[in-house]
Image (cartoon, rainbow, N blue to C red):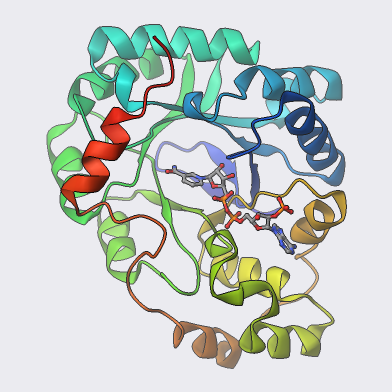
Length: 283
Ligand SMILES: NC(=O)c1ccc[n+]([C@@H]2O[C@H](COP(=O)([O-])OP(=O)(O)OC[C@H]3O[C@@H](n4cnc5c(N)ncnc54)[C@H](OP(=O)(O)O)[C@@H]3O)[C@@H](O)[C@H]2O)c1
């Protein structure tokens, strides 16, 4: 495993395991157990994934020393604001069965996220969180938060894969020393990504699958990736990416695939803001 050093000196694995849309508790626990056995140490969950308890169980069962793990969870929109964020953090901590979180993220750029951020800054200073960050903050919101907050976010988790490469967003992140983390590193399976001729052809040279080429491409750009799978053989395949290196020509060929926008979610519409604000995860 390779590591990235965040702006505050915390070391973060460059690859982790995502558990979005694994709602069944037994399946979540099993997939995560397989992932931990395969060598993943960064786990990416969220209050809104409704599986923090299952994640906590798999962590406990693994017996892996806490300091070897890098646990990420996220604050949902409904719990934004200074007081609510502090409460939501404690609830996540309890569900996970942990006494600190490695990375706590604001899940979406909506509602009172400045209030949330102040609570997170406080929890960070108290040592309950090792690093704090945001998700889905496009350049204008990220720059605004970086300029006005006391503590600059250490991570911004955004959709990022060969069909949406986020090159402009990465420039802003680098300017403010914010590490990019890629959600949906496989574009959630869109574009026939697992059998796409460009990745398949490149993979053949190295004896690697399209999926492995796609992950390797982001890693070589120093982008943290958190692929999700519920299949053991895919979980293992997705972390078997340390014994080959894409050439400059391979990287350039993949760069040509960028379409420059998301076809999963458009954060620039009122519809998305209404839809996500309307999504409640508790009473
Ligand atoms: N912050 C945010 O707003 C946000 C949004 C979305 C996601 N995320 C995080 O990012 C993580 C990853 O994103 P994602 O889960 O949306 O999508 P993803 O990782 O891009 O794609 C997951 C899909 O790829 C399939 N897959 C995985 N490995 C494969 C392989 N080697 N060969 C063929 N198919 C494979 C999975 O199927 P199977 O499971 O059936 O194997 C699943 O359908 C999430 O789990 C979550 O932690 C964050």
